[in-house]
Image 1: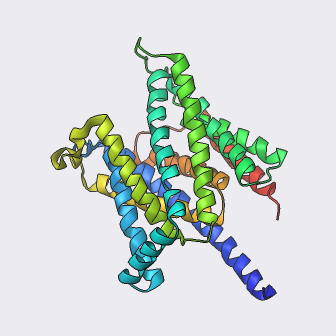
Image 2: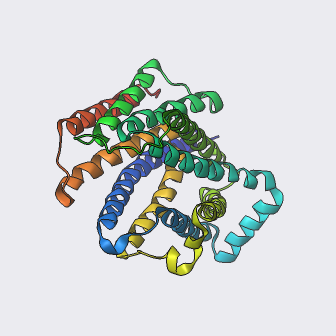
Image 3: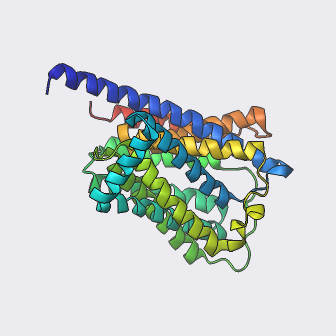
Length: 323
């Protein structure tokens, strides 16, 4: 390979890495704020499961349009997908794995939240940062220094503090099961970490384009989402129930969710799953800070300490990366 071409490609990938991270922080922050605002309105009492499903539908449409632009037309894009389906069936079916894992993850997250105190769940759920790193080392052969392991721990502590609310936790019902809750949060963290690493492996494989990958992922996620709604409450699939509570802000939140999914694909392609976690952490800090001006959020000492720890963790992790 020509050294100049290799150098320019490296430069392009580095640029895409930082651009995708900035976009991730911006759109994830916007999505969090939009969802929070929509939830406070009486005309936006929509079901979160239908919102996730609609987000996948929008992501599918956007990805197909982007693939069409890349290939030079809708017909050529469809031909590319048909070629992948017939010649790479195994690779196509692999996209069902993260879709299934995320469905399992969401169910166990609900179980964990239902059986654990909110503060306990916040602390335990940060284990997903460690599981993502362990799976990255195991399956992707990624090298993580002891300095970076420490930064992940600091990031987890920082996120707990940022999300911590003053006052006592809400009372749990007498039917809660602490053992079931802890087991559920462990499964949630493991499936979250493995699904993220599995998706990173898919997106770093150049056999398919990023947009093709997103299309197959969206298709399997839609199927998984429909099955999840059927098991939860099949009546939600009735149009009058499905679209109940969808105001302008709810639709905007869904569109931002879809765009965020596309940006995550770019982050996994040009960066990695651990850096995505840092981007999401920065989004939480930014959106919480903006909530001071948009909502009734009051900055606490916990929030300030958490922000400082998140920033320290980001600097530590990036300074520990091999150039």
